[in-house]
Amino acid sequence: MTEEILTVKDLKKYFLTSRGTVRAVDGISFSIKEAETLGLVGESGSGKSTVAYTIMGMYRPTAGEICFRGQDISREARKRSKALKKQIQIVFQDPGSSLNPRRSIKQILELPLKVHGLSKDRSGTQQVERLLEMVELPLDYMYKYTEAIGGGEKQMVAIARALATDPSFVVLDEPTSALDVSVQAKIINLLLNLQRELHLTYLFITHDLSLMRNVSTRVAIMYLGKICEVASAAEFFQNPIHPYTRMLLSSIPVVSEEEEAFKPKKVLSRGEIPSPVNVPPGCSFHLRCSVKKDICSTDDPVMVEIGEGHTVRCHSSP
Image (cartoon, rainbow, N blue to C red; front, top):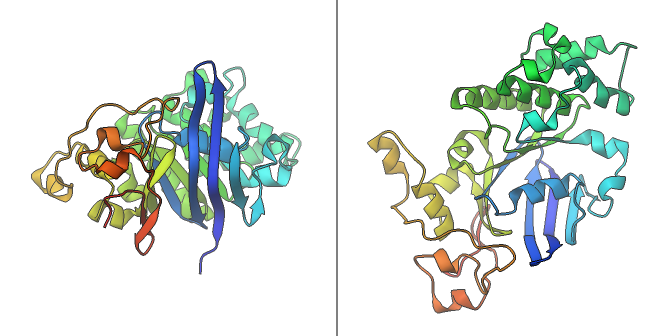
């Protein structure tokens, strides 16, 4: 049986602002097994990037646990050991802002090697060459600066930097959203190949559901700081249950009637996601829901399992 590499239990992350308390992440739980990809999907403002940054230790949790290989790492935050930081890496959404434009690509890729004492030769050239080969970039790119290469190539450098420490778990925070469609496909194929070759585990954060069918092992849908549905990728697309999930799936653009047949019955998208400062009482989705009941406006539903590995947080679930 495959072991769980990451377990998140009742995780909360609140921010105090002049307008009130922002409940960016409000009591979510999930786990990720070795070598699988969990797709965490939601609209802007749902809290999915906050989940990523809290797992990475960039934010300290307000409450809850984050366990990596059975060890609770939620309270260590920025004091995490180098051994732990080597194992958990992140690829950010915008490589233009996450890579230092004043450093050459060689210097960018050498830095994590030096920080973690992984340099095998004084110049580090051989290891930089190996990293460039892994992400399918020419070796002479090590002498370039990021301003001289395209967006897709910058993201390949960012991926190479994340792989420099030989991690086992990588958070991918919308790694293709800032790229052209043709470049997106190349990056996705690269990530999938690297996962197979290096036995990597991914948390893939995105707002693009169309990516999840071919990328993710399982999918978790997040709305206003909470997870509303989790299922295997196949089950998710064949049997979506939560009204929000069905709304998202029905809005995916398609180019043929055959593809349209696979989508759930059209669910109209109502309104916009509320502010996390002013979360509605009861189910946070009820103001936009087409099948809401009276209980939805007063009682927050809990996660229930409706099938093997398929859980839903909805009063109207089977």
